[in-house]
View 1 (cartoon, rainbow, N blue to C red):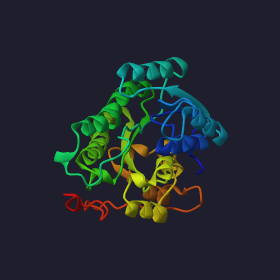
View 2: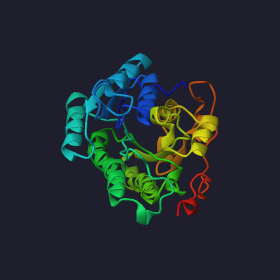
View 3: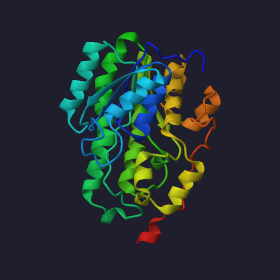
Length: 292
């Protein structure tokens, strides 16, 4: 990992109290970055439904060798988001990496439920925080990157952007995240700023461990067999952030496992998980015909 040290870098990871966001924050910290994370849960004793909190992530960042800053933020509220970026401008004067990861999902995700039977509120939930929120954060981030004519915006996504996964609103949200990165890259390239979408594989998350019955049993088995920790995709993002030629990848959908081969990093167990498929065919565990 020589030449990829991020000691002087300022990074912002949205939705960093658990899951992919926490893993990304830890991996950026491994390279020495100052990592600012946002979330709505300050500490584990605040009555949150899920495990994980800002305080826990900040402690993990510091332990990994970076400097952690946790900021409470509701990404459905533009004023709350603006406050985060005002603080970054005041305290650091710039931003090098933005990882758009925050995501809002219902307590129980409808699986294989026809779109005419899912509540319209599901569309609003998935798209307000997880698509619109990425656009808003990116708007605030770019002015902090323009002076140095370099920066990296990463949208975390998944294969749900190209194949049926869970339900129609979920797939459209993921597809929108991927397309946003591509179109932002077109407009940002003249300014030296890169924008990419990155797909982790099957994530071993705190939510899955807490409630494995939230997803089909076949998917749980798939994650157990082929899964990766959230730190793995974080190491992919850290490698991209430190690559002086990252602009050559701007606008692309990147897979963490493929980047591991290029940059030479592994998951925390020293292994490289198999990459998820780019095949647009639905996985067998997502067969809407069985639910009608």
